[in-house]
Amino acid sequence: MTSSAETANHRHGRHFNPDRDVEEWHGRYYPYDLVKEFLIALVVVVLLVVVLAVVFSSPDEKPVTVKSWSTSNPIDFAQTAITELDGTSPVATYGPPYNTTAGSSQSIGPFSPESWLGVHHPIDTANDFVLAPLRTLPSQPKVEAAVAKYTSAPTDQQAKWTAAYEKSIASPKVSFIAGTLTVPTGSYGPVRTIIGSLTSMARSGALDGALLSSRQFYGTDYTKPLLFIADGTYLADLAQNQHLSGDQWGMMNETGNYPGQAWLWLYTFWYQVPPMNSSSNGDLQVWAIMMVLTLGLALLPFIPGLRSIPRWSRVYRLIWRQHYGELGGKQSSG
Amino acid sequence: MTLRTDLDSDTSADVVADLPEDADQWTAKLRHAAVEALPPERLMPDRQPAYVASWIYVFGVLTLASLAVVIVTGTVLAVFGPTWWHVSSEGLFVNSLHLWSVEVFFFTMIVHLWGKFFMAAWRGRRRATWITGVVSFVVSVGAAFTGYLSQQNFDSQWISTQAKDGINSTGAGAIFNVTNFGQMLMWHIMLLPLVVVMLVGVHVLLVRRRGVVPPFAPPDRVVREEEPTGLRETAAPVEQR
Image (cartoon, rainbow over all chains, first blue to last red; front, side, top):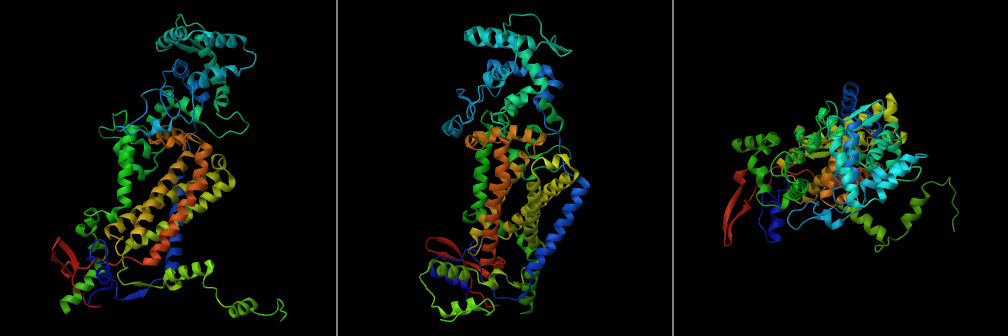
C-alpha cells in the first residue's frame, strides 16, 4: 500500500524524493501537553536567566566623550583635529554616505551600492568638527579672528599651514602642560590658535554639545561626535584593551568577560581571512558572502545536494533512535 | 417584535443562529479558510506522533519561552526609559535579565535550528516553516544588534563605529545610520521586535498546520528505479503501519 504523500506525488507527476517528501504517519500517537510544556519551559528559562543575571550582571562601561578623550589624551585629540581640518582624516576621506571623496566607495567589480546611493549624512569635517563649533564660542575675539583668517585664506595657503602643523603635532616635542598645548615654533598661521582653542573647548565639554547634529533642544543623533571620536586612537586603544578590535574578533565581543554576540561568529570569521582581512573592499566582500550564505540557508529545501546532507549525515538516527529502534524490533520480530 | 433585556440569557447567540449565513461575505470566507487551515484540534493538539520523543524537541519551546522573557524584560526597560538602567541597581538587574534572556534565546534558537536541519524538517510541504524560521533568526540578529547599539555605553560606541563600515558598504547606511542613537532605539524597541514576533507567530502556526516532520523512511524502504531520463528515487510500496 502506498503512502498518501507518494500518492499525491504521483498525482502531480513527480516521484517521491526523500529530501523533499515524507510518508504520512500512520503510527502511534501519545498524549502531549503543549501548554504545560511551554509553562515548564518558561519557568526553567526564568530561573536560568535570574541566576545568570544575579551571578554575572551585565556590562556597562562608561561611554567616551570628546571631553574625556581630550582630557585623557589631549595630544591625540589635537593630532586628530588637525586631520579633520585639513581633510585627511578617515571620515574626511570616507566617501558615501558622508561625503563625495572620489574612489573611496567599496565595490566588487561594477557592483558598488555605496556609491550608487550617494551622500545621505553629509559631513564636512573641517567645518562640522572644527570651524563651526569654534564659531559658537561667545566673546572670543582671538578665536573669531583666527577662524576668519583661515577661512578667507586661499586653499593652498590653508594647506601649507595645516601641513606644517600636522607635521609638528606628531613630534615628540609636543607637550600639554597646565592646560596649554605647546607645539614647536613654525609657520602655522591661525591653525595653532584654532587647534589650541578647539582642544580647550573639548576639555571644557562644550564641543560635545556643539557636535550634536541636531540644532534643536532635543537631540538623539550622535553621528558627528561618534565619528570624530572614532577618528582618534584613544577609542581604538581602549577597545584593544577590551579585546574588541577587528583582529580580536571584536564584532562579536563586548566589554568584560561576557559572551557578546556569539551568533556573529561566522560574520566575524570572514574578516580574519584573506583577502577580506586586508582588502579595501573587505566589508562589501564579507557582506556579499554572508548574504549569499543566508539566502542559501533560507532556500536550503530547494537546493539539491545540500538538502540531502541531513539524510547522508544520519544524525537523524540519533534524534529518532527510539523510533528506529522500535521499527528494527518490529522488523526482526516480523 | 420581541423586546429583550440584559437579563435575558444568550440573546446574541439566539439572534445569530436565526440568520442565514452569507457565504459570499469576506469575513465568513476568512473564518472558514482559517478554521479549515487550523481547526482547533490541530492548532492546540493534545496528542503527538510517537516519534516526537527526543530532547531536541524541547529547544523550540525553550526558544519561545526565552523570547517571552526577552519581550517582558525589554518592556520593563522601555517603561522606565533608556537612562534608568544606567543609574539604578534595579534597572541594571532588569537589563541583566534582558541580556541573559537574549543569550539564552539565541542559544536555544541555534540548537533548534541545527536540530531541524538534521531532521530535514522542510520535508512534506514544510518549506515555508523552515524559511520563516531562518528569517526569524536573521531578523533576531538585527534586533539584538540594534540593542547593542542602543545601550548608550562604550560597547554601543565601539560597535556602531566599527559596524558602520559594513552597513555603509552595502548602501544600507544611507537609510540605516548605526551611529544615530534615536533611530537605532526605535528599530530595537519597536520595528524589529514587531517583525520578530510576527514571523515567529507565522512560524508557530505553520508548525501547527503541517505538524512535526516525520522521520526519514528507512533506506531499505526506498528503492531506486531506472527512468528514461536517468536515475530517480522513489518510495517503495510501504505497508500501512
